[in-house]
Amino acid sequence: MERDAKYVAVGAFILIAIAMAVLFVLWYTDARDGREYNLYEIYFAGSVSGLDRGSPVRYLGVDVGRVRRISIDPTDASRVLVVAEIDSRAPISSATRASLGIQGVTGLLYVNLKEQAGADKTQPLRTGEQYPVIDSVASDFDVFLASLPELMSRATSILERLGRVLSDENLAGLAGTIRDVRAATATLPQTSKDVASLVKELRSTVTEINGAAESLRAMSDEARPGVRDAVARMSEVADNLVKTSERIDAFARKSETQLGHFAEQGLFEVERLVREARSAAREFRDLSRNLQENPSQIIYEPQESGVEIRP
Image (cartoon, rainbow, N blue to C red; front, side):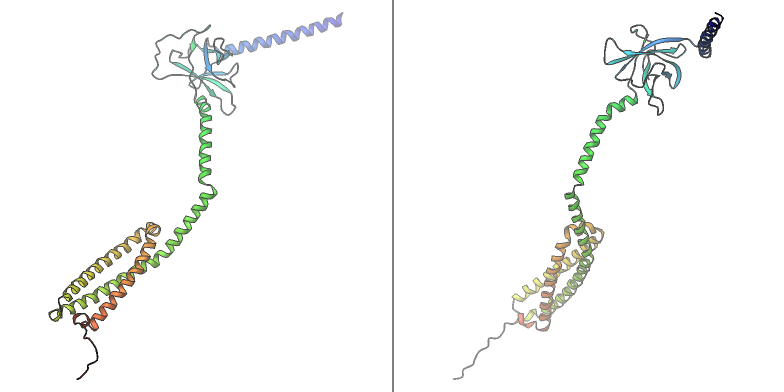
């Protein structure tokens, strides 16, 4: 009997100690807080995964309460009803809006309260099932999650377009274009030298033609009338050659500042022009030299040659 009585006494002592510890914790919590709370209802559209009972409620980042209860809205299954107890001294009004925030890198959620700019604060809060209702708004995190599918779709579209642009066929074509431009650019300095040489040759030819024309003018009094027309035409040709040489000279200077455009569009035309102009210059040079050596061949008609028969 005495042994059983000892066990009963020990058990009673343990139970009393546990009860006192619980009471002390409750007293310490209430004494440390020392605040009065009001209950509010908050309705969130969509998932509140990461928000639990006891999660903090903050007003602009300052703890003002905690979540007491989380349940599905009985009137709308797409919404979640959160009952929060908030410090009575917190500035809650009809302009207050609630949103979900993330606590650091833990992924846990909390309820964040703030005043919406421009909202009317004088209106009373509407009443929910049991308590006043604080309206909720989508948080930046909610907006990000809502736009994530669209962002992924756009990223996929961009990657597909980039893949088409960087296809093997396009890359091969681009490489070929670069090779062609390099080859054309490599021949451009020589073409520029040819143009400069052509200008010098044309100027020399013009000088020779002008000299021949002066000689013809001096002999025009003894010439037949058609010679005057030939002299006028040669003077006109000389003037045209002067203008052509000036245009080619200007083109050569311009090509130095527009290397890429010239290499792509005008290189082959200029090479053909150089060949034709050189041929024309050689013909005019030969003509002028013949005129200087024997101008009478176009002034006087050549004498007819034959066999004289004496009677």
